[in-house]
Image (cartoon, rainbow, N blue to C red):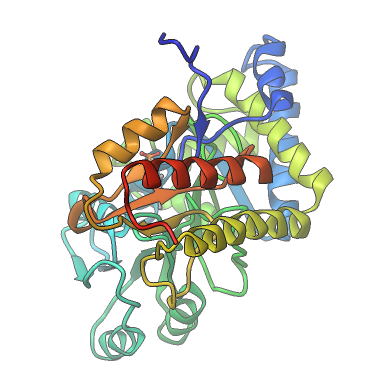
Length: 371
Ligand SMILES: *Cc1c(COP(=O)(O)O)cnc(C)c1O
C-alpha cells in the first residue's frame, strides 16, 4: 500500500466509493449460506430490488450471481437464448460490443449491427431489419459506459413488441442512476451489478426479468454450469439460496445498499445522481472544457470529457492520482481523446467540487487554456 493508505476518491465508472454503513454491514457478521439467515437476506434483497424497480413480485423475478456485471450478461446470454435462436446485437460502443462477443460464443446465429461509437442508434435501420428478417432476441446496453450515452431502449422495446422479439438490456452502469422501466420498455431480462450505482463493492451481479421468461429456462439446454440462470432461479425460488457458495459478505452489503435506497426513495436517489452529474458538467464547461457529444442523450452515470489539446491522459491521470482521485481514460477509438468521470456511488457534492478544483489546478499548471 502506498502513502495514500488506499483511500481514493473513485470517480471512475466503477468501482465506486462505498458508504461506511455498507462497509460495516459487509464486515459485521458471518453467516452460512445454507442457513435461514441467508435466506432471509435473499428474500429482503428480492423484495427491495423489485420494490425500487416498481415491479410486482407476481410477474417479475430476479437472481443474484457471484461475479461482476459480465457474469450476469453471460448468464442471460448462455441460458435464455437457445442455440438455434437468432440474435441481433446492437453495438454503439465497447459494452455493446462485448455483448455481441459473448453472444457469438454461444449462439452461431448472432448478427452484430455495429455503428461508430457514440453515434445515436439508427432506430429506422433496426425496424427495417426486423421487418425483413427473423430475429428472436435483441441485445443492447442502456448506458453505453464507454461513451456515456443512453441508448433508446424504450424505442427498441416498442419495435421488439411489434415483431415479437425478446429484449435483453445490460443496465450495469445505469441502474439507480438513469430511470428504466422494465415493463414499459418490454424488457425480458435486464442485468446490473453491485459495483456501480448501487454504491457497493464489485463482485455481485443481478438479473431481473419477467417471471414467465425465468420459468421457461427450465426447458432450455444448460450450456454453462456455473452461470446457468435456470439453476440460480431454481435455488432462489425453491430454497432461497444460491447453487454454489456465494460471496456471502457481499450479499450482506447488497442487502444494506438496497435498504438505503429504499429508505432514501428512488426518486430522491435519481435526483441526487442527476444533480451531481449536472454540477460536474457545468463545472467542466465553465472551465472551458467540452463534453463529448453534449447534445446527445447522456447518462448520469458518467461524464465523457474531451481532453484539451496537448494534455496526455497518462499525465492527467497521474496528477489526479497524486491528489487521490481516480478517473478513467477512453477505450478503443476514444483512447487518448477523452477522459471519463463518474459521480455514482458514495460521492457527495463536495467531492464533485474538489475534483473540479483539482482539474482546474492541474490544467492551469500545465498551462492549458483555462477560461
Ligand atoms: C461495468 C460494465 C459492465 C461489467 O463489466 P465488469 O468488468 O464485469 O464489471 C458491463 N456493462 C456495462 C455497460 C458496464 O458499464
